Image (cartoon, rainbow, N blue to C red):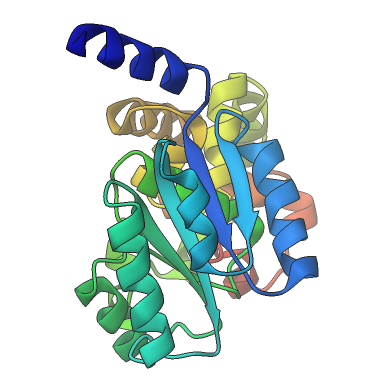
Length: 260
């Protein structure tokens, strides 16, 4: 009888995909987020609710991630701490990501200390936010890095941007060779390069493209070789300036990839 009950339970669970729950009090914002996530994370069942109490109805579901919007509240706010405690009790196997209007280091640290696995600032581009959620879903942790550590986190070498710019603009013949090699990028390499332009680290690129980190590193190596670049920063610079005649006179700092 016990085996029959377990078999029935597993059968019922298999009928429903894993759940990602969004907790956002504002209906318009909640609906917009839900629509985007349903399009980008279609392997999940996206549920939306105004308060964490809505999680009561998910007790029989496989809730993988709860995205809790706290707006301008601080992590130490009693209402936020109560919400986090409720999520932990109601969905003990779910990871928690916080959507906040703040991204200062004390707030981020406080969130991490309370077991939050993803800290998303409302200033993030949607592409990066989706990649961060994917990372958390596969067991990773995302948090904004302090400015002093940003270059290290993104695997950027500390380049002289002006030196790099002049290095690839100085030789027009080499630039034309790079332009020819750029056309040889595979579709997957073009996808990886697009994420490099956003300044994403390898872990986020892997999560967003459903690849392993080692595969991402391999694609980056191929990209650097085809661009005749020594590192990923130079590859992005060469990619953005692959038509040398049009790139002359452009302020090199404007060619650097976004890091936020």
